Image 1: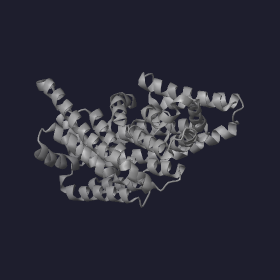
Image 2 (image 1 turned 120 degrees about the horizontal axis):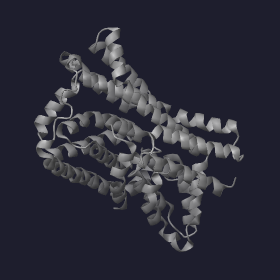
Image 3 (image 1 turned 180 degrees about the vertical axis):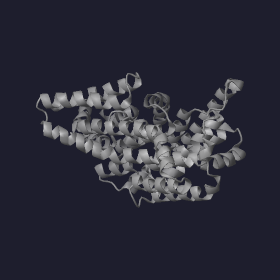
Image 4 (image 1 turned 90 degrees about the horizontal axis):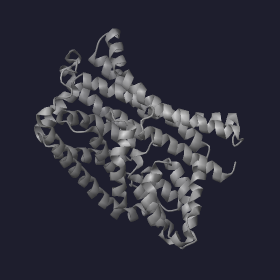
Length: 423
């Protein structure tokens, strides 16, 4: 099978998954595994790969995301236990005294936490710090969860430009430049991006304020009566806060695997707050549904990434950049900048920078285009859509923690993020 046919099959596979997600035909897990299996069957039947090779690709794909899936299960359980124990109630009460019903203030606080939380460049850790802290406040004020995610991903996309961030390091290695040197050229755009991130928080905060005002007396407390007060442990508040801070600090320091940190946190949180095997079992079961539902999606996304990424098909897709007409060659950085957000939905990070960037640099060399300009356009604009991409495992962690469907997340954020990338 020729590289062109492989590339076209790759595009068809990704587009099919995105269409199934956006049209709400089935749940994401089934969309990923069914479409991927059909593509894998075509590849094996046509002799492009052997059955053993395809099985190996799938195994590698799932292996690449299993840590995120386990992390999600135990992070949901940990924050669920802390919520049951009432830790967030006191924190929310203190925050509400500070901001009152200031919806814009809450939106700005979300932006600030995401910016600070993403200093380490880790998408998972930023979501784990920001969403559990702010989601209860959003619920209390009747703000949309999609807005919480939109503010988060905008701030995270800007902070992902740091020299130790994955995209910047990948791009720098491809064009054989020091990450710090590339970052110095990115700095003006990062400053503009931070302004846009704050502007995003203010704008959407105002939008939420208007929406809530229109609802008026129609709104009722979303969580009224839902919480089981029998599980509250106000006497353990100090311990729970210290435990949560310890988990976050160890997470940021990256000493142990993230999922192990939450495993230990869960064990300590449950053992200290509750007594008896029966109660422990009940608490774990109460949060199992949310954890396993999203974990299954992440693992099925691993099958999808295995079939397309580990097989090298995404790199074949990148070669399609050679079809750019000669007359447009010198405008390559602008073209790739404009297309980066849609392309982020098609390519995972490695394929985008290690597959597509070298091809575009090669094409640009024919027209005297500075490779750094192409790299900058790709890094800056692609980062805007990193955490709305269905091929980025961290995306599923974010939407799972916020309780938002992937299709709603993409629909809500795509246009805004594309606009930010164009600016």
